[in-house]
Image 1: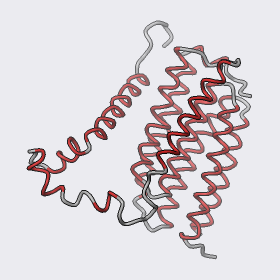
Image 2 (image 1 turned 45 degrees about the vertical axis):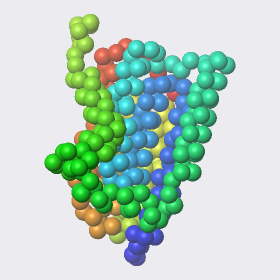
Image 3 (image 1 turned 30 degrees about the vertical axis):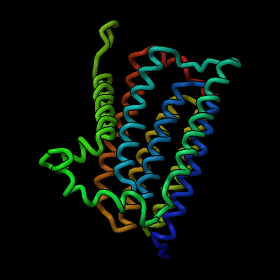
Length: 184
Length: 91
């Protein structure tokens, strides 16, 4: 019995999406925040796998390192500073609901601006081919890779630098020994 | 053959997700989440060979390194901070 990759790929995608939805509902339902952090890690790993199946290998790598690795460390740091129990009450429900609705609205609004899937006239295909010629007169940087990274994609690089910085903090937090108690 | 293995791993991931959701203790969830990471690595390698891109094996190795960070962080938090002790019941 042989099953082709073309047949299998949508199945894997669908199953992974389904599992992601299931975990997301679980995260909302569970009250112990310690468990939620672990579930978020599992969610990130499934999400990264989905990204790889969808051929976005670099995004998957970022998701796995930031989502499953560093986020876990940061969430645990937040838990250490606050509490592992979720606060309850009516006022605590409205604010998260508002944030979720606004975020979802912004994301859906952003989706409407995306080019059609697979269309040839999206910016990545039409713009950018002339960077080799434009680079030196516009930026004065001899190396085109440097000029794209630091000038044309400056904000992107700034964000990446922030991610690397956060990652370094996470690693430090992992390996640091606490000074306050003796058993450490 | 590879496709069958892929489907089997997907079923395993689904079972692990059930364990992550149902608990009952934090450590069950932690072990299941870690196993989801392992299953994702296998899934990745199998998918790479299925689509004739064996380079995915390298990605799987990186995943293995990352998988360990989260678990390590949770366990360290549990050992050193007393805050984690009260959050066993996750319903």
